[in-house]
Image (cartoon, rainbow, N blue to C red; front, side):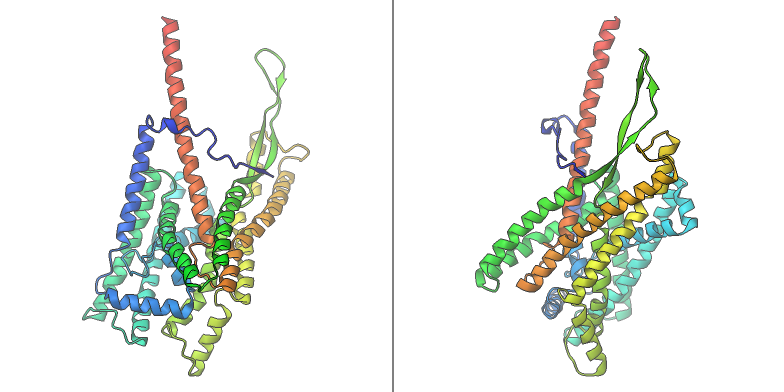
Amino acid sequence: MASNANAGAGLNLGKFAQATELRQRIWFTLGALIIFRLLSFVPLPGIDPVALQQVVTTLQDNTGGGGILNVFNTFSGGSLERMSIIALGIMPYITASIVVQMAAALSPTLNAIKKEGESGRKKLNQYTRYGTVGLTVVQGYFLVIGLETMGAAQGVQVVVSDSMVLFRLGAVVSLVGGTMFLMWLGEQITSRGIGNGISLIIMAGIVAQMPTELIQLFASGQTGAIPTGYVVGFLLLFVGLIFGICFMERAQRRVLIQYPKRAQQRGGMTQEKSHLPLKINTAGVIPPIFASSLLLMPLTVAQFMSGGVTDTSGAGNELLLTVTNALGRGGSLYLLLYAGMIAFFCFFYTAVVFNPEETADNLKRYGGFVPGIRPGERTAEYLDYVLTRITVVGAIYLVTICLIPEFLSTQVGIQAFVLGGTSLLIVVNVTIDTVSQIQSHLLAHQYGDLIKKAKLKGGGKRR
């Protein structure tokens, strides 16, 4: 197992002044992220901000910071608690894209479309957009209904509109428009900016919430609500997790690939060697996101149905209370299911994004082979064997990173989702990817200068 920890090796910062295109891309990306942050403060029409803050505060006190609402609020940069037009963030698009990718791997029809090249990719992107609109409509409607229910349960008039029908229609249309605009903005960042636009938008939302949670953590330490030693230990663990994630995300298993010997112009034979890099964490941040969303969804539905209160009167409320206690964040059942689902999605998504049979066929087509392994079916079996082994390591790594903050939150009482494993995985992954793209642009610029100089020197000699 090798680790490419030197992601910034060869990064010449002095070339920034000369790389005009790169600077324009960086400025475009920063401008787009500023627009995203400004939109997070634009509220939905017909909402009373003061009453909304009262409802959100009461809900957070009753749930202890749990629930899928806190996850969405983190990924949207606090837009959900302010009920802005981008309250749902980019999560519907991510869910739709993952579902389409999984469907393309399982459905022969969609798999055939995927293999059509650029035209197939455009068709799948169009299906993803349709799915995004449908998910946003459904989630937006239930979000508005849940807001009304919780406001009524607490005796607070959150909606100031005279017509509830017009308010619901306007709110859902605004939420759909906000999510689709973020999707378009992310695509513009990817094509005209630097880095992956969708990932950068999510990272911007998480980073925007970090100062608030750090201030709350320090305030809890000063007031004595949390012992000072626990706060210091948590911050040290936070830094240690960042270094650990940086190492593991760059770690890979390199499979040696050899090609047939070829004759040289001056005589003799040469044999080319290469490596097939297999990442330890091929699935990325998908397993924790899916696992947390699926586990917290029943808890959130129970909270909405009970109006966000903990009244235990009646058989229905007793059932809701049982579900809430069993699946509450930090509980033993929650941690067990969370670890199991992370491991499951780690293997499942790795199987979706990497096909050993297709890779073996491509190697055989170009004459490549693994030393000691016959090309074709045997190579596919060997790659599947190696991939399974390193995926076990990747699953253990993801489970450890995600469960340590959850366990500490339960034992110490630190409710900080932004400082948790899922958020750190996203921030570190996106940062590494963005730095790598900046490095690639700088290297391309340096090579372009060398080619121009070589042409000038060659032209002078020809004269």
